[in-house]
Image 1: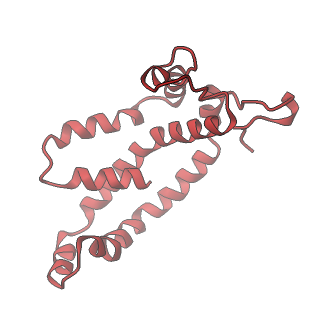
Image 2: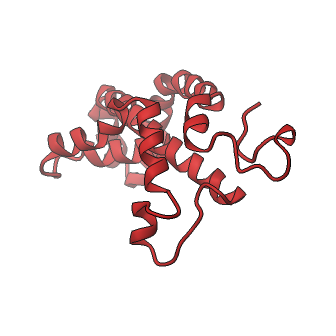
Image 3: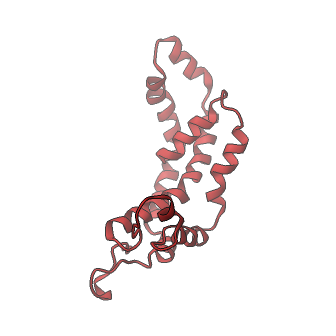
Length: 167
């Protein structure tokens, strides 16, 4: 949510050039199916021939080490879900009247104070139910974990469960 909100704030700034093109590029991960994104990231995180290990020095087993596998699942889940909140927050930010922010600036509020006391509460009214629903969806996102790690790495036997298993 925080990444989507940050990008929505940046994209709402009128001084930024090429907003339409940036929005298209930033929304592309949302247009791809989850299983395709997971398989793509699995290939990029491959220990032998993945592009991530070719860019970074050394050979890191992203999907084979327990903590790195958890980090990888969380990172790919972030990659999949930030465009949704970018779209939602962009719509909600455009619905907030600019007069309220201008009044706060006239009263002497800083940009951060106006955002924290005016924009964020108005934003959360419309975004909070979607945030809760998205949490419930991501909590049970079986397809991502199945395609990315298969529930592994497994510390011992299969009946003990893997490091990235779901409930």
